[in-house]
Image (tube, rainbow, N blue to C red):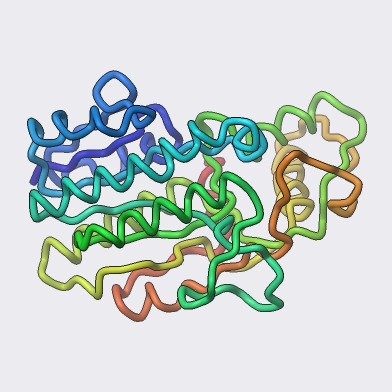
Length: 286
């Protein structure tokens, strides 16, 4: 089985390169082979590759910067996934694509399920929603996996930023009114492998859109506190953490206050479930 993973340099693609080992011929491509900023150039590469499964782990994820780079964000997050899906339909192979909690505005009081109407607050969320819509419009067999607060020991993410700042500063303010589930890239990669194995073995659930995050919930402050606890356990110096509301930390892009996603449909349809976010954090740090 030939598996094509787009987004070689990203933290999720790096996790997939480990998790998918032994599953088939896994080929990872970054900008050199697949420039997602130039979607039309993807077609020739895909037709030459002729994969059995396409996994799109590439994305424009600079949430604040997207407000001033809308064209680039839409090229990578909307147009490119549409091209991948068109080629997947032409090749008659499935596409796995990752989306985000940012397609919702966060105004709901309970976790979002897949049937809730999206209403993104900014360019990043709108571009990711447009990518979902472009994929569905092709009729290709697909899994759109919405996730949240992704981190790992690679690239740029909240975990690495907090580890650095907590050891550099005496005091650190972190917002405590945005709630979600920190999700390790390793968790996403392991779940993706499980989904592929079920498809390979003829045990696939229904194609479509699903939510895939770690279990449990916390705030960014709670996530920072868990990171600080691990640093303290290692005997490292650690800043004092102070909780603040989002209003005291203005950013170019608005964030949803409620990023909780209900993942029960994935467990029910595909029999794939995820660990609690705090357990996954410990595994990541190990």
